[in-house]
Amino acid sequence: MRSYLKKALLKPEENTANVQETVSFILADIERGGDVEAQSYASKFDGYDGPTLVTEDAIERASEALPQTLKDDIHFAHDNVRRFAELQKATVRDFEAELLPGFVTGQKSIPVGAAGCYIPGGRYSHISSAIMTVTTAKVAGCKHITACSPPHPQNGIPAAILYAAQVCGADQILAMGGVQAIAAMTFGLFGLPKANILVGPGNQYVAEAKRQLFGRVGIDMVAGPTDSLILADATADPFIVATDLVSQAEHGYNSPVWLVTNCRTLARNVLTAVPELIAELPELNRKNAEAAWRDYAEVILCDHREQMAATSDEYAPEHLTVQAADPDWWLSRLTAYGSLFLGEETTVAYGDKAAGTNHVLPTSRAARYTGGLSVHKYMKVVTWQRATREGSKTVAQATARISRLEGMEGHARSADARLAKYFPAERFDLSTGD
Image 1: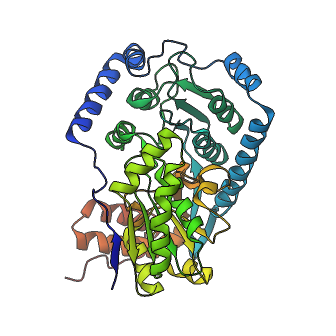
Image 2: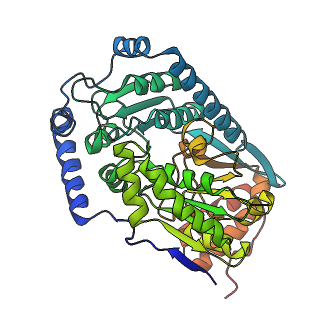
C-alpha cells in the first residue's frame, strides 16, 4: 500500500486549443510569406531587429567577451557530451549477413542531412542546450547544423550561447526564437537548408510547432514541463534529497517533482526542509520553485522498495534519482525513465549541464515508450539486400504463395517473373493450396 504525504493540487497542463490555433496560424503565415513574414514575427515577439543570421565577427566578439574560465567549462562539457555521443554511435554498426545461401541482407546507418537545433532563451540562457543538441548532431555526421535561439532586444543572442554553438559545430546560427524560428528551419528560410529533423527544448509554442510539423520533418519528441522523481530510503540524506528536489522545481512553475520513499522519517524531514531551501533562492527561481512545489509536487510513502520501483515506473519520470541502498538492484529493476542518476554522488544537475549524458529527455510519462535525444536520433538505420539467382529461388516461391494468400497478385507475379526467367526448365507450385 502507498500513501501520499503530499498530493499535487494540479495536473500538468496540456497545450490549449488557443495555443494550437495560434501556432497553426503563424506557421501558415510564415510558409506563405517566407523570410519577410518570419522577420516580422521575430520583430514582434523577440523585439529584435538586428541581423537574422549571426556573423563570424559577432561570434568572435562573443568569444572575446567571455571569461576564460567559462570558455574552459564549455569546452569541458562539450568534450564529455561529444565522447558519450561517440560511444553511443559505436553501438550501431553497419553489417551484412548471408541469411540463406546466396541471399545477403544488411544494415546501414545514414545521418540526416540537415538538423535544426532549438536553444531556449527566456528565463534562463541555456548554454547546455546548445552543447547537448549541436554536439550530438555533429557526432552523428549531419552535413549542416543550424542553431537558433531567442535574441535579447538590444544585445542579440547571449555571448555564451553563441560561443557554445560555434564550439560544438553549428554551421549557422539564427538569431530568432519561438514558432518563427521553428518555421524558418523547417521551410529553409534565410538561405538555410530545409531541416530534416528539429531538436531541442522550448516553451509550449515551440513544442506545439514541432508537433504540428512532425511528418514534414522529424522531431526528437514533443516535450512538456520538465519533471523529476527521487527514490530514497532510510540511508538517504534528507538535506541532499530536499536540495535536489528544489533544484529541479526552479525550472518552472509547472515542473513536477516527486519523492518516493519507504521511510516516513525521511519524508517528514524533506517536507520540512524544502520550503526553507526554496526561501533562500533568488527571487525568480524562488517564485518558480514555490509554485511547482505547492501545485505539482508529491511525496509518496511506500511499504517496500519493490513498491517504490513500481511507483516510479508508473510515473515514468524524465529524470530519476536513486538515493538508496543497493544501486545495482535499482539499475536492474527500473524500466521507465529518461535518464537515471544512481547514488548521492551524482545529481540531475550534472546531467543537465556537463556530465556527458544528454539533457533533452522525454517528459509527461513519455519515458514509458521512448528515450531522450541521442546521436541515434539524427541517424536513419536502413536495410538492404542482394541475391544470386539461386539464392532468390526459395524466397521467390514463398513470396509468391504468401502474396496470393493475401490477395496481392501483382506482388506474386514479380516473384513468378524471376522464377520463370532464372529457372525456365523448372516447374514450381505457386498456388496457395486452397
